[in-house]
Length: 300
Image (cartoon, rainbow, N blue to C red; front, side):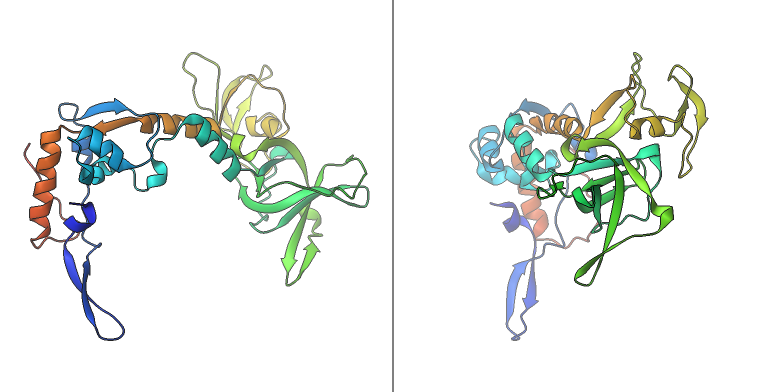
């Protein structure tokens, strides 16, 4: 029996007045963390890639595909797209879906006036050379994330001034932001899929660093911080945005996602007997009256 058939039923009235029986999705089931993390019950198996959870259910639970819902719940897969994938396929899709460009603001100025949907450009001569629509502005790491970087191939001039110009959409026109207080320049550049997520020192402990920590003359972290919109030149964020070569470890967006991907491949299961007992219990429970958010304890 599939998971949807386990759920209780309710009557739904159509606009025509016809009453039909439908699944009451507001009364579904979840598995507690105490069960998911109970090492005396849970066993783990490595799967490099999973095309359908029914295949895993068939293999792990006595060739029964209807227990796919338990595979999803035990492993916190709230969508089929989170199922384990091969690393090469994952990387290819990830880079395609995160194909933008990241412009850091020189001197780590907090350009908090920049909004999604703005157009940011770099001029070469009298016309723009590079630019793109803003996907997101990150005030923490002082960076603009473009949906993708565009190049004006009709402009043959070389870029000599990396000032960033903001254009605002007004009706059918783009209007240049001429506020002198909004003058900023491009610093460090990254691909979106490789954008920096965390910074760590290179000690044995690999401690995560605040981007606002001040560095001493040897670029070692101190106990001082600067959280202002125009941080001191000795801060890590200032040097990082200016692409100064520092001996710190960078964790990228892609690296962090690959770690998550690796974690999904060590999948959790219960014994076949317990799986069928849980399924039978839910079938019985679905015919009874229970409240949304109600916690039910099962002694195993």
